[in-house]
Amino acid sequence: DAGVIQSPRHEVTEMGQEVTLRCKPISGHNSLFWYRQTMMRGLELLIYFNNNVPIDDSGMPEDRFSAKMPNASFSTLKIQPSEPRDSAVYFCASRRERGGTDTQYFGPGTRLTVL
Amino acid sequence: KNQVEQSPQSLIILEGKNCTLQCNYTVSPFSNLRWYKQDTGRGPVSLTIMTFSENTKSNGRYTATLDADTKQSSLHITASQLSDSASYICVVSPQINDYKLSFGAGTTVTVRA
Image (tube, rainbow over all chains, first blue to last red; front, side, top):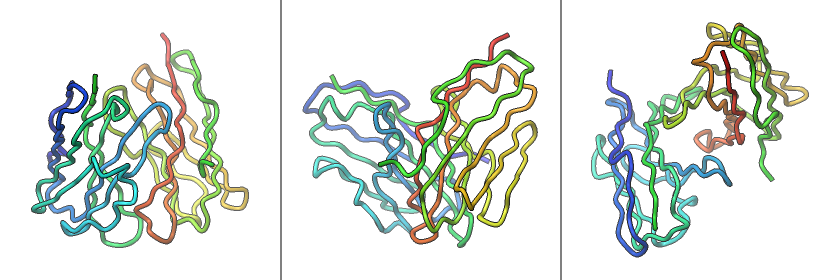
């Protein structure tokens, strides 16, 4: 069974450029999460989708960040324009929400470096 | 202030030895507590999960304990192996909006031969 798939695994870009991160959740999962991990702040939730609908985007740092989930098998996180402080590892996670102790399964992450 | 505090920040142990990691949390009311293992360059993977009514859970050489009264948890690694070298993250899920996980900063474990 394939896990959560993220692409690219590494991205290096220059300040001001647009960055798009991609995620394919586990088949059958109805919830998707985008996280950011840095040494200073650890793991932070950016946005949560349920059944392709954004439920909580309170963690999105500012208007430069946007996320979409056009269907149950694909999501994107876009940063435009990118800044050096956006450098971090971005994780996508998914889960099958049935109520109770549902596990979030994390992808391998995208390491973003903004020069 | 972080609602999940872990200690120590890092530790080094010799292969075959045991170690114990600590987690204190203030999330209340809470639904469950998990320990995740994160290998370098990989995403976190769930090791154990405990609800408030459980006080111990094992997964192979990993044993987690929970004291809901004192809001403390520990993860014990028995007979460590080189593959146990990773970051171990304590994660607490609240009862309301259970998707909003509170993450500890992690304990980095290095196992040396």
